[in-house]
Image (cartoon, rainbow, N blue to C red):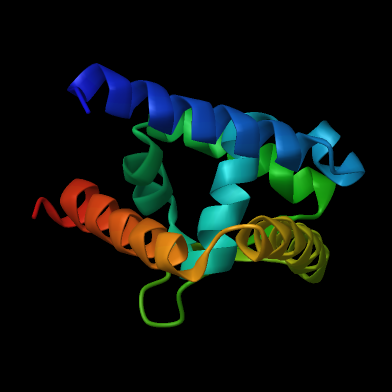
Length: 141
């Protein structure tokens, strides 16, 4: 595949999955960036504000606005560090966890249906390719 074909494939996957996520009724009130911030905190644990900004290449001011909105909607909450009161961590709330778990469960069903239609040898190839792509883009090797 050419770099353009890889990019188009990743774009198509992202677009399809984002569309799937937004078919979940509760997510409709969130902007795409807010949704991805909530997933980051849910999947990777509490994050400092600058870590969220860095993860999505957002300004800190824009990150503050997005987190403010998600706090107002009840999906995230900020808590000061016990060790250093200047540090603020963003945590997911019970409401946020419930929504993320619902999405992940529904996503699991879709992937399971897909995998049931694919021969085992192809599944191993797909798993290997996803693992390699992830290592390449995240770790640089």
